[in-house]
Length: 377
Image (cartoon, rainbow, N blue to C red; front, top):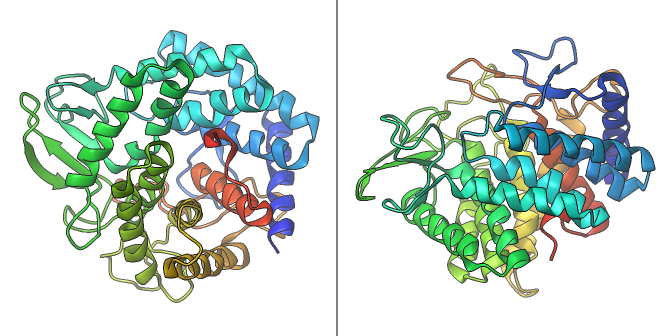
């Protein structure tokens, strides 16, 4: 089953590249036309599309993907040099699956240099007084200057990797300090999570938890919980700190225990399920990858291994059977019913490119048993 789904995903990825050339997919306001909007490399999401091309090459060995992924990756140098829409923390989302993947697959030194330069740019988001990586906006911004968000955990591997490549501990130290702060303040006592947390910019003292994309400040946004599962497991991969592994496990149990009947989550765990309640297939795809990462770090006799493995298989089977675009040859997305920012009415029920990416990553992990290329060590 996984192989058929992978082949469908790779074919659609190739079709998108052939049709749209150097353009990148952007989120629409609804996928009735079975399409993305296509534009320049100027948002926080483009790395997922390039990552899909590198995944497709690694799996299929089709030289088409290597050539096209290489062309796309070169455009990230232009973007970094010109600082095109890079005033945020999502540098890892852009440069892990593009530049680091290119370096790991091709050993292109220019890709390695690009990824290291991107890591240096991410360090400009570090706020030493507060000891956190600022998510959005310029330093000192009245609204966002003291804000972190749970998504940032997925950007930290860029810094861990940079320390390994350079031997300079500053990247790893900053990543770990931010992970520690995230663990302490974004993860609640019941193993749910805040999407965002605010600190006093002058001294780093905690102010309050909240949300930007969740149902309300005290709710648990499902995509945020998924980022936490995966992000803490990755911090464990790079540091070996057992607290990160335990935190990933706790977040994973909370997620799995609240799956609906078809094993694909709604957009927030606290929203009332109804026939018209939006799902977020992308959150389930991210969580599947996070669970697979977590499983890989558990001992063979750990009872959570089989518990989480069964949950992944049920969720992925539902994504393939009920949410994928298999049998829709003209569809540009791989998964239907993803959500971006429901409260802001941005892509509430749509193709979501990060959903497509993590869906393909999870499929390949399950079919081949290997981890994703850009953080293999």
